[in-house]
Image 1 (spheres, helix red, strand yellow):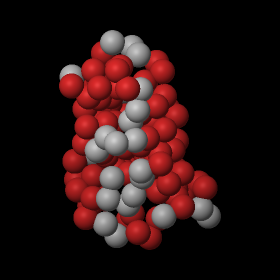
Image 2 (tube, one colour; image 1 turned 30 degrees about the horizontal axis):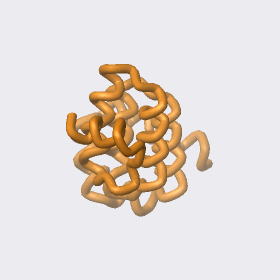
Image 3 (spheres, one colour; image 1 turned 90 degrees about the vertical axis):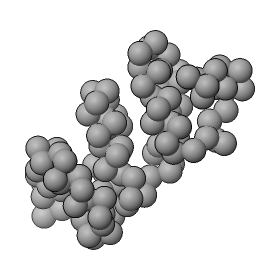
Length: 112
């Protein structure tokens, strides 16, 4: 909740840490603060990596955010070898087998 208050006062997410943004998403979805949802998505998009993109997929599914899901899918497609060989992907496949299968289906359709 502190991060939500910080944003409401400063309107700046750039100094936030990845973990705080994922917690902030919970609060902004709960209170439906649309402007902050957009800023969080933008932050996540600009800070994507092979080690956190699976977390973004989980967030996208948790909050049923198709924009965030598409961002993650496109990142994975563009960085497939790095993502699919990561420990994060292995963990993601074990914990989210349906989502992993969906991602692999998406990948196979955009990368013949």
